Length: 295
Image (cartoon, rainbow, N blue to C red):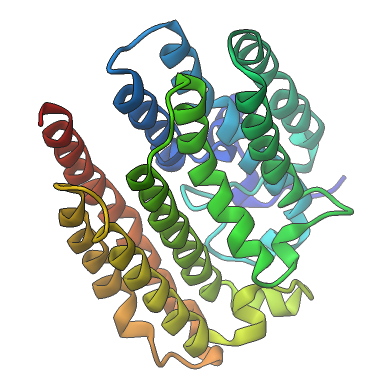
């Protein structure tokens, strides 16, 4: 009998919960919910269904599929097996794939029924990006640079979908915000990949970080954060105030700008700080959106 790694033990529901990354639920549900409300100025059934979809089913599909197909490399990654990523028992891999693929179906069916062809296209691209990142044959996560772009799509596409589902024209300011958000997402994925350079190289997995190296990748992340801040400076008031919200991320990433590849795992300290910063910045973004809605 194959031994079950300690980090992979637990009931099926607990492992599915860990696979969906509860700490990251808000990162996909919030962009959709905020974008839809800002466009429609109302909370309706489409908002409720869409928010729930991007809260749990979307994340289980994204991360559950990833955890199944990354199992072998995750065994060698000490940060897997908790809030930063599940290490699923092999015996629940089939269950995870079934749950990840079936749970979104009723939500997607409803959203397609109430949406437009444009919203179908955005939703299709979003779901494709979720699967393409991990499934064999595509594995965009192993294609340097494309890995960061695909990961950013995971978080920006719910916001774009919310705007398109609302049926309102998307103005220049909204496109600038989406562009800034996309740069933020690419920067965050790139920095997150730095801590995994040793296990990824050991497993033969390519990433933006394994190709560019730790120092260059961290500096690229800093540049992308600052570029995102620069973009929102061109948005209508009070949008430019959001530019300062990239600074906490720069502060978190800055200490690792010269980290050598051999010590890349120390960037995990910064990544854990990043997770906390996200909630604080999210609160400030909410306050800014409320202010903008009242003007």
